[in-house]
Length: 225
Image 1 (cartoon, rainbow, N blue to C red):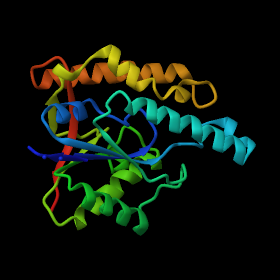
Image 2: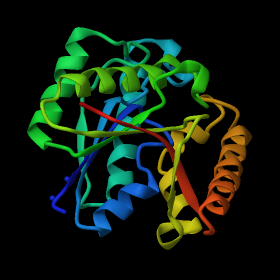
Image 3: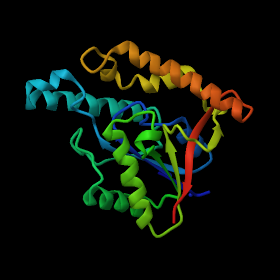
Image 4: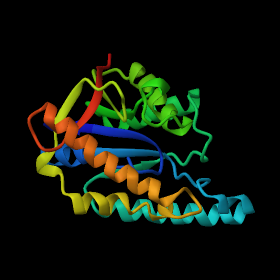
């Protein structure tokens, strides 16, 4: 979520993942806005090692928590909120909609970034990626103030934002790789995540050409009530 003082924005995210922070957050901070990221789940089931029972799941969750803290040390002025929903149990429920609305009422965002909420239009069809977008937009519909919604990971973007001044390849990879556990053999095939890094680089370059810059991010933007 982003609140402009310009004062405030926010991001509602799903599991711990490679979109926990977006470069555009850095742009908002530079412009004087307050930024808060809402993490719904740590993704503690994202390893075959957790099949071994409760203790192994708890141990893996501790690893994920440490990774989140390490990542946010890179941007200490960015606020973090965690709902701590059990991994793979995120759904568009009344409870999560109300909790999200309460976060919004406390933070008072003017702009909110959400994962693409339509499965067919998302680059990532996992339910823990889709549901947070649906939860966030449902909460935004009840929010009493006007708010702008921007969906990331969308195949149907309608706005492109120049990010060239904030794109630092080394720093970006450092932030991505704070999620070290996701690069290990027991969570996925590591080389696929490196392919993700290449794909993201090429995509930001492609989006940049649309606005006459080197790098840009793309969003599907909607205006809330």
